[in-house]
Length: 85
View (cartoon, rainbow, N blue to C red):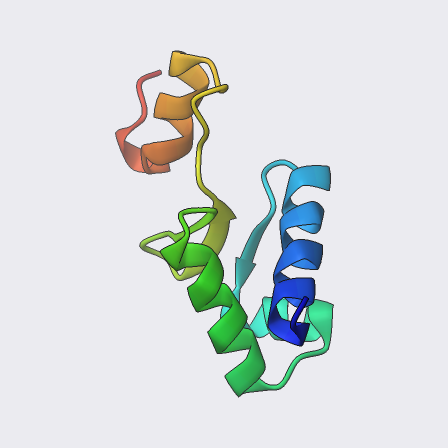
């Protein structure tokens, strides 16, 4: 396994262990102690494979899965100001 694959595996694990984790690029760099180029590359790998997605406010979140209940998946993808009461 390459260093990038090892890092991607670690990050996937952290997102799975902490449902709802939302990190900006800067927060991800600090949490995983990465330089900007490495952090950008691994986040791009995870976005490209569909594990992570970017939010309009610049955070990286785990993409919803088919295993999520439909209502939970809808809430996860809908911005707070558009959610039903």
